[in-house]
Image (cartoon, rainbow, N blue to C red; front, side, top):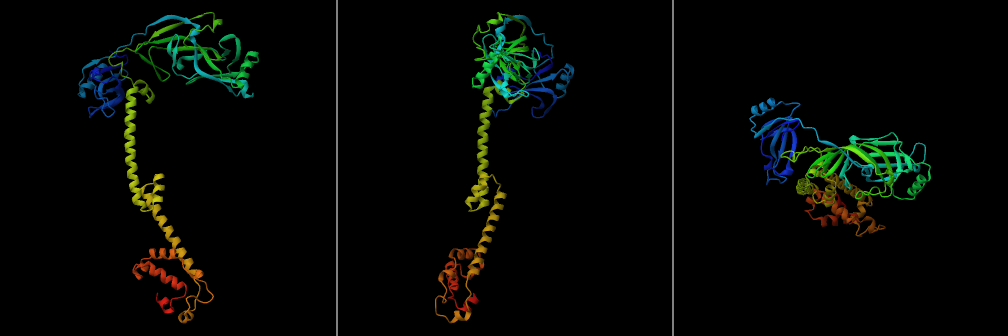
Length: 462
């Protein structure tokens, strides 16, 4: 079917494609080599039977916005770039949406979005004297007794007055307060003081003791859009699937504090003081047609809208991505561990530390070298201290003495630490060569020397 603001060149029949795989881009490359400027939109999709995450999308149609392209200019571009197409449909102005006057009871315009009432800090007054209500969060309210699934378009919403009445259960005689702050952004929020009457003060006291109050809004509509079964529309950045209703233009008349909010599945007589008033509004039919391309081609603006429109495809892509991501992550972890193991050598403690801290192999090697250097320095210092602790022995006395231990000296004070000697031997290539690799011989000699049992000339030679 023709589009209002775009000329369309169909490259392939949309019936050949998976309905949930359509997407749209501004410009790009088609058929591997043909460059498409950003002023032309490309409709992509996956052929039937090829809807797996790894299967490629191919171009199904090209769209030429009327603000940049005339019919002649668009056809010339297709010809100049040798782009074959099945059909070409010039843009056509959309007929005005059908509207009609309709009415509904005023109780049908009361909405509860599970909003809770809380306390707020007033100007110069204590917190409990003021209330704060988030009356509408901007979402789609489900299963209203008249409207079905309903969304209130925040862009078309306003307050009737600068100060909005706050009632109890929507009864005019039960006045609770009024708003001094009221905002419509991505939600509807109001704040204000409690009145001094008994109803207001009793309700405030109940809330101070923890009683949970809900809130609901009286929102009168001037334009209501009806969404038929099988159709969709967007409201507040979300997708509403028909059957349902969107209030495109509406006015907030009052806010109420309620025990249970609104019972959406009954026409309830709780609002008897409204005297069964009827509200007039313009009913507007949704113009989205269930035709070939418009039924499935949607410009994706966010991950959320994609997930809402194509939940099955979204789940497939998400699952496939997780599996591939986990496999790739494990592969990278194994490669990192192997590189760290080479860098750390036999130091398993350092290996675990570097892996936990995601160190690179270069960083691990640097830490390993620094640690070995510190250990060597510590060992040298230990040997030096041991040498300083050795008692001075006169050479002549040593040479002619037959005693195993010099008089007046204890074995414990001159005995060298065996572990330190072995470490010294392991760290010195010269000692290993001198003693033929026999560490026990070296330790025995050093211990004998410390006890004064080595003759002077032998000690000097060594």
